[in-house]
Each structure stands twice: as structure tokens, then as C-alpha cells.
Length: 250
Image (cartoon, rainbow, N blue to C red):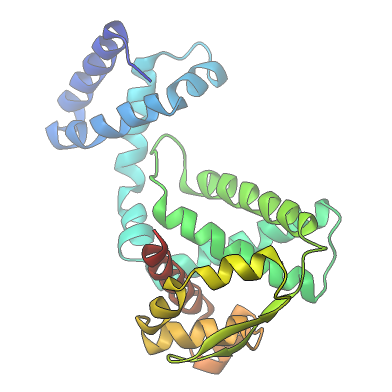
């Protein structure tokens, strides 16, 4: 999205006011954030939802939120604090459970497995997606969680009739699938030799988390107990393993 000169002038004027009040450092830090937000359409959304707000108001909104919660975002995204992520995980579980029940799902083994998958997918997005600093962290996290939950529900029902395919063995030197050899999925997976080599690069802890999760079908809570770790630590290990495997694929 190309930003016109008139809007740029307004934004820079607002940043100048922020610099006067909050200092040059804050103004310089939020400048790229604001322009990326504009490219993503977040300013347009703000102006529509907060009429009669102006682009200058948006600059101040980002400045104030940045100043208030930047240390917290560092805890979440950089330091990955266990205490902070434990709270986020518990809150996310509650959100996902309510959304799943609202969409006609009830407590069962499938429910809890999907809940684990939703939490994993959401954590990956929260850690990798840029935080825009024009909203609070929890509203932002809820939007991600809500989208991820609905996406998982749709995917599950769409794949209900797909051929079953589960890991038969999982070790640093041997991993293979037992599934319908005539299925397109089996043929596609067999072609991905990178996966077998990528597994070998994982640390023992990451391998163990994947083994317990996908071979023994443990929930994250079960894995936490088996490994004598917090559930959040297990989710982090799972995220790190999946991210490392993705790098091989990409």
C-alpha cells in the first residue's frame, strides 16, 4: 500500500509531537511500526471504528501503548517468560474451549487433542507475528486464538474422511509412516525426504516432546508430567521443534 504525501506529513507531524513529549527514542521506535500498520490497513480500521479520530490520534495511541506495554512484549516474545506464558496459555485455553463449545463441540478425547493443537498453532503465531502496538496484547492474542480455533475446526471436519495415518516408530535413526500406500498423502509424504534428516537435528528434549505427542498421543499436560516440566515449557519445546522442522522444509 502506497502512503500518500499528505498522510506522511500528518504522521511525521504527530511523531514530532511525540518526540517533544516522550523523547526522540520513542518517536524513532514507533515510526516503522506506524508505517507498517498503515500498510496493513490498521490505520484505516482505527479511523472507521473510532470516528472522529484522526491520523494524529493514531500516532499518539501507538506511542502510549508502546510506552505502557513494550516491557511486557519483550517478556512474551524475546525472553519467553514462563510466568507470562503460563498466564497466556491458561487464558487461551479458556477462550478456545468456549469457542469450540459455541461451535457445537463437546468435551472428548478429540476435543482435548484439538485444544492442544490450537494452543500450539496460536503460540507459533503469537511469537512470530509482529505486534502492532495499537491495541492491548490480550485483545490481539484473542483475535489470533479465535481465528486459529475456527481454522482448526474447519480443517478437522473437512478431513474427517481422510485415510488414517499415524507414526509407527520415532527415533533419531528410524521414522516411518504406516498408512494407506495408495493415498496421495502417503505418496507426498514419502517424497519429503528432508523430514527424516530434519528429525536428526532436533535436541533430545524436542525429539521427546514430538515422540510423546505424536507417537504416544500424550496431551501437553501428560507430557509435562512425564518430563517433569511445566505445560508452558512443553508448549515452547513443541513450538521450537516445529519451527526447526519448518526451516528444513522451507
